Length: 326
Ligand code: GGG
Image (cartoon, helix red, strand yellow):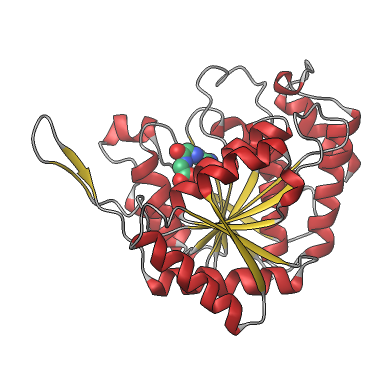
């Protein structure tokens, strides 16, 4: 069976780390057909359109999409691409790896981030030169879908329950709906939960990340808190993500375009390659997914490493080392 994989490198280091992940997937004995498509700042400059219709259609029909990074046009690229695959949750594991210098080497968290609404729903207005507004959308239906996924996630994995991170003491209506709906679904499913205010959560994971395991959060909170967790484990070059939908998914590193190092060939490909391992698991290739995870872990521990992790290796050196270990 052939799996069609849409490959959308985007901008900046997305153009370096995405081909690296494709090389790793190509090294496996799985019948993939990779179809590359444009999106992002460069194509927007050329054509006026950050996300060409054919790229959207490809993501909407391919078995899975591998995405790199979006820059200035992130809202016009990544949000519609997540919609194209009907993704309702962004799974962002943040764990420290052996041998990597981390602020909190004991970190092992998974963020389950709501992926369709909140302040990323796109309802922003410029009313006057002085005043800009943003409408935050939270629905019971999206919160329920996320919570059902979270219940299944913790039941299938080795997790006791999950934490709901919110700010319902201030955003009483929107985060009230979020917190109450997620807690009710967990209750219906016999899954244990606790809750934490998201600002307190930010402090607590810096002091002791072992207090938490699986964290269910609204859209913006998941984006910000997972980047904070990246700082605890050694940097954004290490965090993968899976945008999961009922029938397809989009897999991307948490990092952006890193314009300061783009084009130098030294971007850390680990986050994108682990995202590709999540793609393998999504398609049912558990053994191959484990093998990629192990090859990445071993390479992070033993080298070579890119400069963000204190090494002097190139993206290509690291990718080849991972492929050799597969
Ligand atoms: N590959 C991740 C990426 O391109 N990040 C840029 C960004 O701004 N993302 C916002 C988001 O993840 O919602």
